[in-house]
Image 1 (tube, one colour):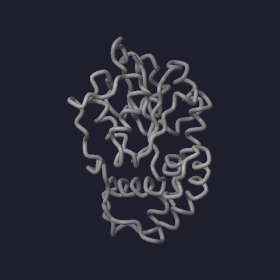
Image 2 (cartoon, rainbow, N blue to C red):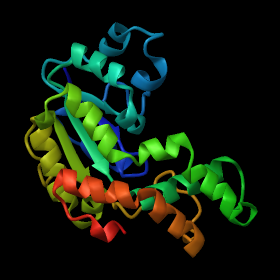
Image 3 (cartoon, rainbow, N blue to C red):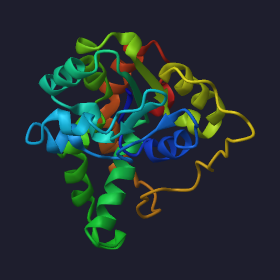
Image 4 (cartoon, rainbow, N blue to C red):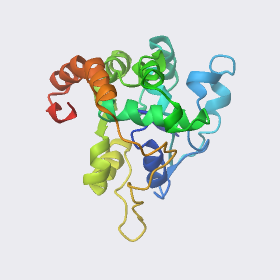
Length: 234
């Protein structure tokens, strides 16, 4: 049964979550991870083809694709049309750290070394539409909750993967509607082990100030919306 969808954010621990949930005996990922159906294949390939993989009557089936967080509103409406009870999981991360991690990954994919990239190269990446949309959590939350009931959306913190992974996984299980992990079967993967990481260079003051200027207002607004203290992000 098509039960849940992980929508992001990119560079916020979705691969770790996929690996952890894959261990659960009542959870399955028929397509694997990062199918990119709703953001790349739809509507060219009809939803029936995608949904035909979710056929179990006993397992909670789903998928995780980080790019789904900023899907257009009309696509989210289509998802709701086919699965109105879908449980949605959204992991958010300090958008400054997320943007820096994403830029470093892009650097590696461009086959460039850190010394070859100027500050302007990084600034252009930070200012790109793709990076800005991925860090605009409030916009994503608004779009999804315009269509789905807010109770269908579980918002988690990247920091909790490091600080309280067991608690985070219990929240996921409860949200999806499956029993908690058995301590005998769960093997908690070290969240410090990087997945798809870029270079390890630190953020210099020029780039740090640029990112703070980009995200200060968004962080403060999100803090109000979620009623969470996010001041440490700045």
